[in-house]
Amino acid sequence: MVISMFAPESEPWVKNMKLTEEIKVPGLSPDYPVVKCNKDDVCNVVTGMGHANAAATLTALIYSGKFDLRKTYFLVAGIAGIDPEQGTLGTAAWTRYMVDYGISWEIDAREMPAGWEYGYFGIYTKTPNEKPKPDYRTEVFELNDALMQKAYRLSKDVQLDDSKEAKAFRANFPNAPANQPPKVTQCDTVTSGTWFAGNALGKRARDWVKLMTDGKGTYCTTQQEDNATYETLKRGAAAGRLDVNRVAVLRTGADFDRPYPGQTDVDALVEYGAQGGFEPARWNLYKVGSPLINDIVTNWNSWKYGVPQ
Image (cartoon, rainbow, N blue to C red; front, side, top):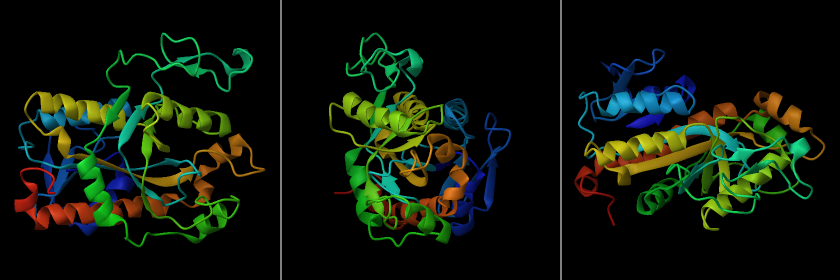
């Protein structure tokens, strides 16, 4: 089951995997009311963008009775913002940690104490450097490392799509990997309902991932759904309807999360579409995710009881 968030992410899967069977499921997004499948039982659901749509759609899917999901592998595949210290436009990143950027306290940066770098800090803490207790139980998730490593090994040598616009834009960055061609990597993602940009908030994302994972995670991509998606799947697993160890997350860089030297934060955000990363990012979802899916389908006897050694 490939989980997309909006139509441009879904299109490469529907086209290349010939997902021609449509199954209507009550409770899905009114914009995407059907799950599309092929003869190999590879399917695609489109949730709609944002955490509320992701949770609502997947809840409807899990409890619809239309699918037996107990042995299903789930691939969350979506575009994202990307940290230029970890990747570039079109980079494909397999995720281990998902960290919620938005569950926090915030004061206006113009009114924050002297010495603070940003106005976000953990709930019930006193400074940005203090780790909060996970009272919400959705602040941090760690995916099955064996599945993530298998997915990375299967896809690490894939030739990725690029664009002339992306090549020109990334040349504005003085250092690698931002100014290099895209590749497949492993790093971690933050979930935020607010589409943030800029050096200060980008640094907060880096620091927050390190803080919330006890130094084990490395911030790479930013998106709006993954913690909500995973919590919904986790509850489905607790209800005996699926196996949360069969969930992988792939995010591709459609735009940088901060400006190149000399560019303003506002231009970096408002003019994100001019970066040229959108098209290669959405097609690279299929190019990097399909080796995992094809291996599962082709070698199902090895996969049906869990991730093979």
